[in-house]
Image (cartoon, rainbow, N blue to C red):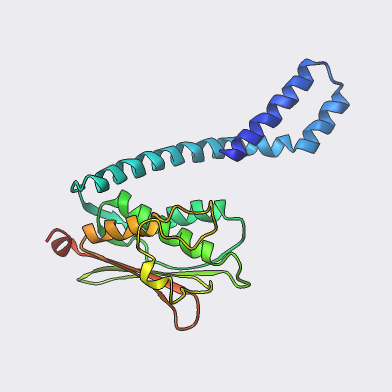
Length: 227
């Protein structure tokens, strides 16, 4: 939204200059300085992204309402790899720094549950992993997944500083956050844990033996999830 506002401000400034009778040379220089050609090319994708983001917010709000009222959401088979790649696309696009992504996810990857809720869990896990690497020299996000007769296991590993002994027992508690003030509500992991529990699944975050942290999300098969 901030980028879209900047672009519309630039276009408004340019059109004001046109209306005021600025010379062609002045207008050409203004277009070059403000990089209007790039802004115009980007507008379509920005509008599409804004609309998709609005749909995502609507779905998240609906999911949270269902979660808070303890209603049972309708579950169905869905492609977990699509949820992961959609989350990756938006988080990497909004990240302030580059992250190497090692993607070992089979496509498609059938899972069972409420796709919207699990998508939000994946978003929270990836966002936390990326944020944890802000001060790291090596920023590598490794995502693995596998499926068997029991269900689907998704792991997300970062190369951050890991989880301190003091933080470990509290990471799933509501409003607990290790992020700087203004960068997190402390609800993401708590809500994620609740959603996964409603699916009869398992969610854990531990320190990896080679450094960083690893989040593990297990979603059981249909029979176990509906038990």
